[in-house]
Image (cartoon, rainbow, N blue to C red; front, side, top):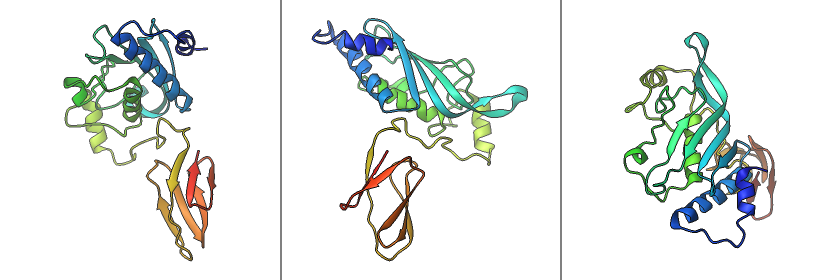
Length: 226
């Protein structure tokens, strides 16, 4: 049992002592729920309430390998410290594993875009994790204001890789209900708004689901993806 789960199990019926403690407790609950909805993210923490997190992501990102070659890295670790002024002030975010990204420095400092200069206290810890995952998979990057100029130049010049490198959303285990209109007698491909989900109308009302783990449909025309 992780410290997050253990701490939450001990809090039943105990009101948090301060507004900051209430926020830390809410963040712990949100992270516990996020982990249950993801095969990508794991975490442990320390503090009472939890305020130092170690997040581990399993998915495709970039790193600088031996002899200066850019390689795909699939294990990533980020430390997040929720300081005494949190949530009024931005948490400390430090990248601990190798990453080659325009907005992460070689020392592990992370640029969070406008949140770096105009922190929004309402941004929750699970939302921050989604941002970190989007950085890893190269869905989110800014070459105009880089923390790593070499990475920015490489990303701008390269023509081989297509981004994002990993098409899975962080909450990849959540069942998404997607509405699909079936045109009888036509053969078609429909790409849904949910990342990575694609449907092919084979014939009549028969639907083939591509790039998903499992699908079930009912007479309402809603397809449920897991």
